[in-house]
Figure (cartoon, helix red, strand yellow):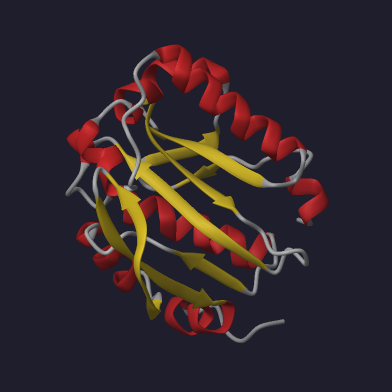
Length: 195
């Protein structure tokens, strides 16, 4: 697959338990259940969304950004139920489309089951093998320890911190920077050397 193909038809990915499919405006109500969760949104330094309409507008912005080749957003669902329980994305592509940032969010009711790791393993493989990315980045807040631990389990390496970079609810938070290179991922996953 090429980037041109991915930006004309976004693939659906599957894992043992999950379907990772392109998000649509029909997902607004289900997505509101996690976008409105204060505990989840605080992990990203954001306020919770207050209405289904706000979540629908967020989805519409993501779809428009996809149309401009700016991001790719998927809904996470169980194979047995099409309701979105989370989302993940590639965004913030560099001009050459060799590097992208990874974003992800899961409803807290489904945390601690390894679902996000399962989803991100599939998404990372798609990014390296199908999109031809050389580097995938992630930049969680330092207070988001679950995200930090997940990135390390996925093979990401810490590349430092920007001290007190994000101001949220009256306090400054450090932002951490992680990256995974295609060659590193190939060694970890047994995919062999880069083509």
